[in-house]
Length: 454
Image (cartoon, rainbow, N blue to C red; front, side, top):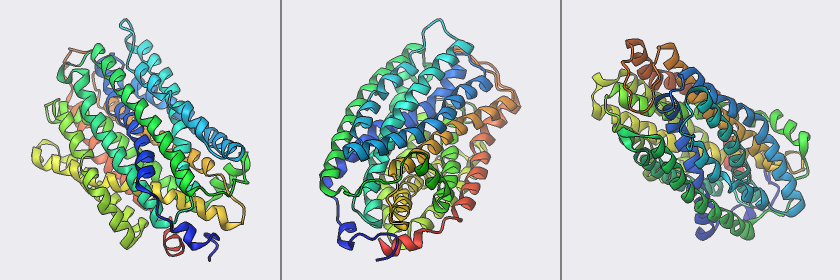
């Protein structure tokens, strides 16, 4: 065997049973609500319901994510400590199941609060929710690296996750705008939406905890993590392959969250039909339910790296079409969003299945195990940073264009510069950011070796 994996080949080629795979994937249904609804509605909720100026609204979403840069690696360290001491990471997962409470509170802004006080309320519960999300997500994503499975089986595991995550994104992305009241959204509507979706989140996340336990029971790696604490963090940050993969994923995460934040604005101010928000979300997310198995086949044939580069290129092209706006015609624009959705499916499946490849390579490079939790803690901090930078970048576009904030029921006249900012922020800016992701991803070189040895 090569230095990438010194375990017997049979141990890494084992196929995981479908039942535990489905249970594991169910956890992503709840996580999909958290990664979708705040990104889709929170900026709009602040500017068009709570009368928060776009620059302050963007800041209220950015600052909590900055805290994640420190919190997620710390959670990753705690996950590795739990793994070493207890043989699993279950306690952290159960703590993370309190996330639905923070989600419901996020949209339950007291009726008398508008402007800066309302932004402060949202920021506080966004910080709490992000910490609880980290407590669940970090040990959850460490699971593939904890199992005795190989290169292709890691992709299969993450494909199950991706299909269910997509379902969570699609259902929550479609239901959330409807539950708020659609075109006539109100504070009470947002509060109702938060409570209803929180209940579904809790059930799905608890099923995920059970699924992880069953997976570990069938294919857990008995080798404990030896590196820990700041030593493990230094190892992760010095890992060249990990750095390039993380850098590219930061650009991808920023871009996709920017697009999500821009959907309600693009529908209302560019397409002049707020009801099209649901249509655009469906066009963006629904293709992933069909094409995730296709991305799995493509990754098996050409490798994860080449497949991911193709997805990034397709996303950039589709974004440029959206920058054209109404003159392109509604069918063309919806088709362009669907192209983004196909690419998005690949950009969710492939990087997340490459992460355990990197961890396993680092695990056996020096013969000493490296904590998967530490790697995933840095990874999820990167994802959280992108989730903040995307809406913030779009909010800055609106602020530069002179976008006028309002409360629910008001319809201020927007200047031409603001309307241009809505369009170019939704199309041109994502294309540029995704091109940066593609150039960074080209520096990642582990994939050919990982593909032929595990």
